[in-house]
Image (cartoon, rainbow, N blue to C red; front, side, top):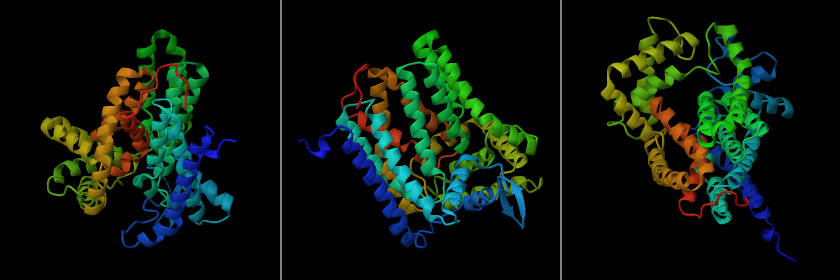
Length: 412
């Protein structure tokens, strides 16, 4: 009788289970002892307060100065997930959320195997899965009430659904991929424009026969986001597809470019300087940085400065592309991330180049990695924002060394 690990699906599921267990041990046992020494606030964005109000039926509002304030700088999906966990557990404890995020990390790890298995030989897919399961950045966010673990799962699922659509252009797969992208955008809007990029790429690569599937993709994504856009317009009088913060992040991207040469390893120092600039810009208006009005002022001001100073715009783009891979809260953490992430990203882009030539259906994966880099080069380059594409980068990096799966071959 064959051993349990010779069954086709057993080893990938075992790796995923080990990843979930590792995340749970880190979240519940190791992270509590690291919180104070590393100043790692469990809920720095006050999403717990937002989720508590949502679970209590008060709506998508923050508690500020003793009153409830409608929120515009967060997508609704992650707070809704946390609120649902609060309701299901009957408490406002973060422990059930940490358990959920640990399990979700395991699911993402298995999804990496499924994704990689469509790009390369099974052994390479298993290597990519192992690397994703134990990647320090992916584990680091599982105990914290931050969007990264959920967003990473959704981005990875988006890539997988787009790869399935690329393999066979059907209306059903188009709607499915669009719906996944729409849900991902409701967590964080950065991926929403990629629905149009993916639809265009599908038509360019496969011709007119892909038009119905491409239209289904784009339509499903927009329809899913539209109700939240209507909510934002009703409350603010402005068109905000999902959330604000573009302006704030643009100014922070300017600050990175201005101060990176003298402060190449510390987010917190640069963040403070960027925050001071934001306050000085908004002081005459009285607007808040994440309010619809304040966000628009900051975004327009940053864009106008870049347009009038093209040399700075080029420097800004290059620096934020570099810091997107490593810049974190401290010198030690930034150096550690640079040592880990630069080799992975270098191999990922080399692997993407190889797959682009040899496996046409994988081009959508290459495009998404390039898209995330391009957007953050133009907006802001914190290492935290690169986390959602780490699983995809690992798949492409391993593909550089693994045999590519031929078009039409059976999948892992």
